[in-house]
Image (cartoon, rainbow, N blue to C red; front, side, top):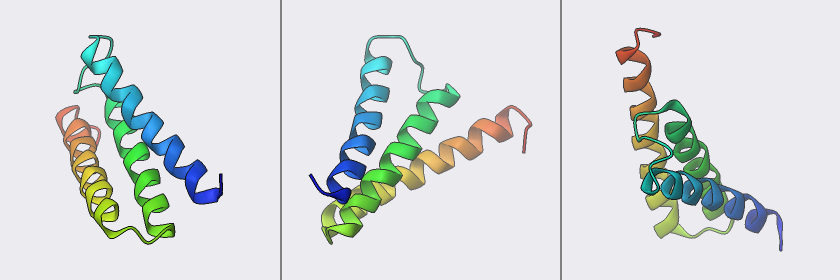
Length: 82
């Protein structure tokens, strides 16, 4: 595996971990750890897609990261930390 493969695999693992923990009821979509797993995971997967120049997944993961960043913003404004 090359560098992009490692980055992408780690990013996807983080997204899947967030999903599995949410589905099993161990993590709520409103928890900071869920939001961060999605944000960091999507950002890494987006970076890996950029490195291999795969436009469809750059868009997918970029939007995923942007939505997660918005959720992070909402999390902090809801908790009056911003």
